[in-house]
Image (cartoon, rainbow, N blue to C red; front, side):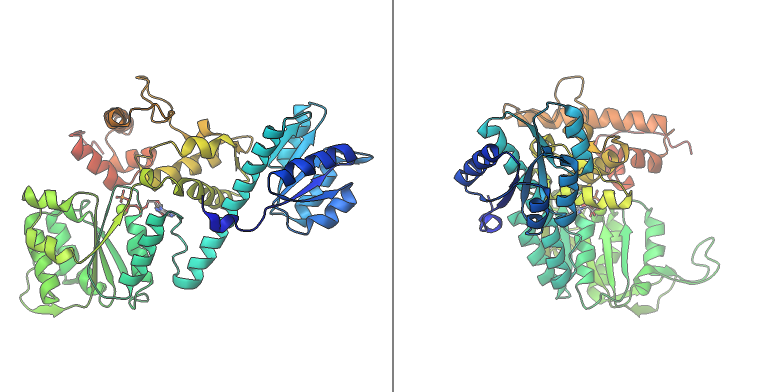
Length: 463
Ligand SMILES: Nc1ncnc2c1ncn2[C@@H]1O[C@H](COP(=O)(O)OP(=O)(O)OP(=O)(O)O)[C@@H](O)[C@H]1O
Ligand SMILES: [Mg+2]
């Protein structure tokens, strides 16, 4: 646990008109190390609420005041407190209504000490997460505009520090990591934090265009250089002058192109296709790949000299399953993001964090983001549970989520098979339109292309 966030004692307000109940609750909570304040009625509660409690535990029926009013008062006075309502009446309706108004959880009287403490610590965890998001966001914004990169794991903190350091130099950067880990995000952050920030950032997806197009797009061409080249055109390299060039999926480039790229990097000048006169360009190069470039070099798919040229500053993005502590904060971050975007107020069921922290996220952060986005759009009572987020278990019973007894080695094959089926079915549905299929699958067209290549899936594009 991160002691930094727990250094201050968590503050809890207990609201109940029954003295007995109040004192007992306070006793239990103090015994568990919380700082507790007691309030007898709604008026007292709302004066206290401004104190910024982490959690407020309130009865739903007190004298003539109805509990919902207490709840509203508390939410108004201290919007950031998590509220747990107690109900003695066993009516699930009032609890549901309370959650609709903004309570985090409810507990039915009579309850056991452990049940109370369990719910309180969940509420505190929830509050800590929203504070983390707010804290990280403002910290990065102030320091280095890295506000869009969320994570609290040592790996991400280290990566951010290295990103900032490398941004201050003009070095070529090679970013590696699995699909969906945030390679493009980091590339943009490097640019945004460099002296080139107000010049263009030009991303080129090397896998998506053919060699000839890639060449003329990058280097430009002379008039009449090839059929259709009616006028001379500047290439992207010239457009990017003073800025940053991002070669995404660099491993997918053909060796002949790699040679030209290497020359451009070494000589800091380019030649338009069909022209001999060199043009000097000043661009910073960032390249990304999710392949192991050394293997590509060994297999002669990637030029060794270009590899050495690119491998100056290396940033490795760890997959999400290797930094699971980032999962909760990413879930909260994307929930906020899509709630805002869709003017929704969806919340996570308490089972979400526990369940998703076990999930392997083969599609990394992109998969997590899509899960949350879809759930916010689809869930109808505003409460997102783990089942709404996780993919349905596959028929073979090899679902990606399970307890600690899961044999992780076998998972890869199961995931592969599930991926293959999903890709083939979606492609069939979209009549081979890959852009559309990628969209339905919630992955980038490049990722789809790559998966198809790896799994040797062929599909005639009829569009
Ligand atoms: N640490 C993070 N914080 C917030 N959002 C993130 C983070 N990492 C990734 N994302 C988001 O996840 C999505 C995928 O990220 P990105 O496109 O940068 O991945 P990638 O590594 O380039 O993937 P691919 O190899 O498939 O192209 C984006 O929407 C990005 O904003
Ligand atoms: Mg990418």
